[in-house]
Amino acid sequence: MPEKTSKSTKFIAVANQKGGVGKTTTAVNLASGLAILRQKVLLVDCDAQANATSGVGVPPDKVKSSIYQVMLGDAGLEETIVPTPQQNLFVVPAHTDLVGIDLELASMDEREIVLRALLKTLNGFDYVIMDCPPSLGLMTVNALTAADSVIIPLQCEYYALEGLSQLVHTIRLVKQRLNPKLHIEGLLLTMYDHRTRLGYQVAREVRVHFRDLVYRTTIPRNIRLSESPSHAKPIFLYDPTSKGAESYLAFAREFLKRNRRKT
Image (cartoon, rainbow, N blue to C red; front, side, top):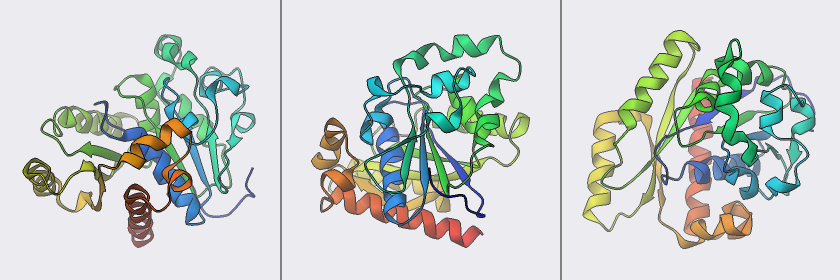
């Protein structure tokens, strides 16, 4: 575990209920990029697929306890945190057991704030990044309720804006009813190919609608970026010279610059 610091921790949810938009890739590589930039980072895997867990080099079937046991009170949060092969990067792993968490939480009092209550006990991290499942179920609501802000990855393809209004509506409801401080941190354009007219048009439309909320950095389509999860490594450990690594490091720098400007 990292040493305790006086700096307050910022909690970020990475969310989009539409699958295949680079959500977990963004959560993993933003966390890894921030760790490279000397930030102490905790990645919380809230998705039953556990891809963020394996993506930082922790085999889900080898963990003793996961976020599932923590949410149900069967394990402590501190004891569930696992160091990754990368310095400054830790993970609260997920497991396929998490697929039943909505049913488990359904009968609980204050079921939407379980994760927030748990994360309040944390010390010593600069950033906590929560990888949400591709749905707007109770686990995503818990992450949004625990978060200070939300990063929304958007794929640069025809259906990029499909479902975005529903996600924005959910964020608004959580802000009104459960978490008044919640706001959209930014939108990240992923799988961008500047050579295609479609990619250019989608990027332009998103920037027109969301203006300064859209990050200047875009994440290109990159084969090395696609390969890195199968090697259980963030892109910086798999191929640090790739376009994917360059882009995610630029994104991590832009993210930090925005946050320092706000403080």
